[in-house]
Image (cartoon, rainbow, N blue to C red; front, side, top):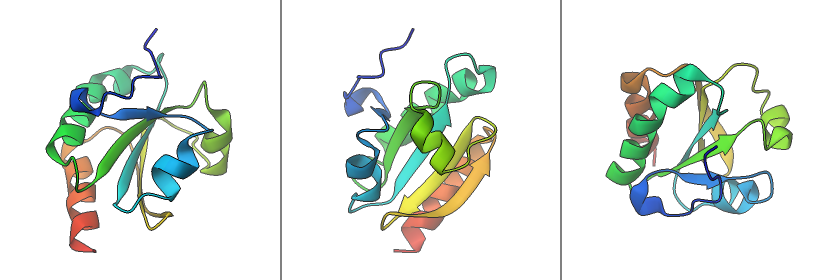
Length: 118
């Protein structure tokens, strides 16, 4: 099982929880891409290296975080996550774009569009 307490952003996306979501996502000064995932989800596992790559590539411009929906059901319910992976881009504490599935090109476009909108 993956350690969801991993805060070493130099290795990729930071893991957030129901308890840290407000501070890390809603109060962020920069856009935040949240990857809602679960350990049993095959497409989520396949997408993980790309999500980590985006976290490294856009560090300082866009925060990329992961939320395990099995361990953090409150945020999954709040944002009506019914299928995973689901990615939601937040800016100014508000969700501005949402996508389900793991298409890397679409994910990169979400990030670029969030940066253009600033």
